Length: 287
Image 1 (cartoon, rainbow, N blue to C red):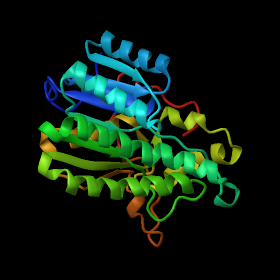
Image 2 (image 1 turned 90 degrees about the vertical axis):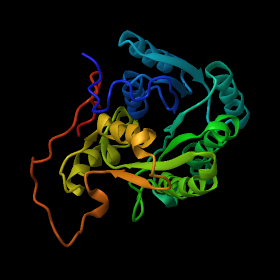
Image 3 (image 1 turned 180 degrees about the vertical axis):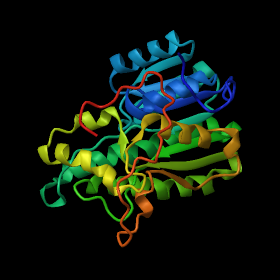
Image 4 (image 1 turned 90 degrees about the horizontal axis):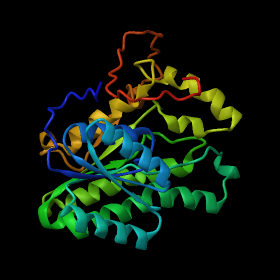
């Protein structure tokens, strides 16, 4: 059994796509889908063993992948890694700026160091990666960038650091889209809502663990999304079918961002998930 993508099998044939945070979760899933569509995927992350595992999975499925271990918060490492990718592959056609991370905390208890660390991870690091991919490759031949954001509309209690960073990423994507359009580069953002991904298992705070199973009640579709539902949106934005879309964001949130609190929606099971990832692993935490 292979990845069950809705896109044609050769949609990314001959393309090189860089995926940061490619060793787990949404990054891993998207890497599998793009590889199944003919792309050579460049997996970037901090833990080499995780990257190797994903690259081996892709190879077993008949795809093509390479790995580079680095921290996107290290500017010199980013510059050197992008240079290596360009030297090896010739050019970079697409970038999924997916890497990031955060921890739950009320703002009153959050240190400046903790706040700045998350902003560097979820905003500044993504900026540096996109800048280097543009300067070293895409400025010469065009390409497509998809930046990771999130459903941070209306505030993000207990996640104020990542809410601020992800909101900044939406605005930054719009600026990139304007400044880089003349080079043939499109830039968009993806804004997932409640996604049942392995990242949920990183939370140990009892309050957060208890809250996660209740999140789906806030979405009109009354369920959590899965990784392949985010991946398919990313793949679309990277593809030629999105050639006239730039400077935008795409919500993948089950309608959570447009829910009207004055219009209660009863629980239901009418939303049927799209499950394309043949190697998906559900989070251990109850969702």
